[in-house]
Picture 1 (cartoon, rainbow, N blue to C red):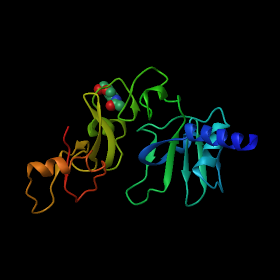
Picture 2 (picture 1 turned 90 degrees about the vertical axis):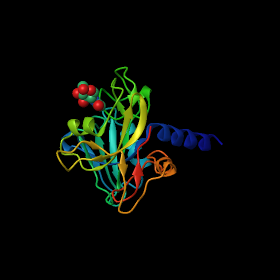
Picture 3 (picture 1 turned 90 degrees about the horizontal axis):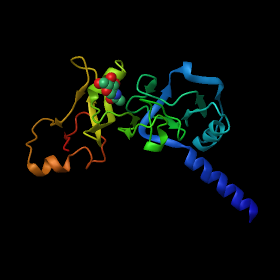
Picture 4 (picture 1 turned 180 degrees about the vertical axis):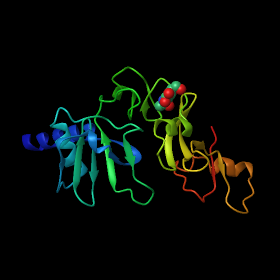
Length: 208
Ligand SMILES: *[C@@H]1O[C@H](CO)[C@@H](O)[C@H](O)[C@H]1NC(C)=O
């Protein structure tokens, strides 16, 4: 009875501690890895989280399920330091610890941001609007992908073209060959309505 309770409370602690930024897969700049922070043969993200939780310098971690590599970092990720994996190569999960994010670092909710800014578009910022151009300016080498952003304080998913004509383009409508827009399509293909994942070559609309 007592041991069941202890196991349960440990599991609950790790679940609270491990917070993923949904759909952002990848690692951080290796310079941010803690000394001895690369641990191999780790069986799950939960075990990796436990290592991070037990190291007071650990603010975030990445876990690669295919190789069992767990890397602990001294900071929470941000656009300039995050090395995001491309479409189709998304096997490295990235997690942040609660109440550890400083300005422009990733967050899940306002309480994560230690400098008192709100968490908007999954970053700690007082900015009310975050577009693909904002993200491109924060990391000029970032790849075309979908991202979290915001328009006038409302969080939305962005479909960003980062590698054509200088990059930083926020896609509003994507119609592949022979598609005739009807008002209902605009609604049904809205980035939020679709679950927010837009791959290029798919009909898409961003409506807010
Ligand atoms: C917030 O706005 C400032 C000023 O335009 C900009 O330098 C910064 O990159 C923006 N941050 C985000 C997260 O959009």
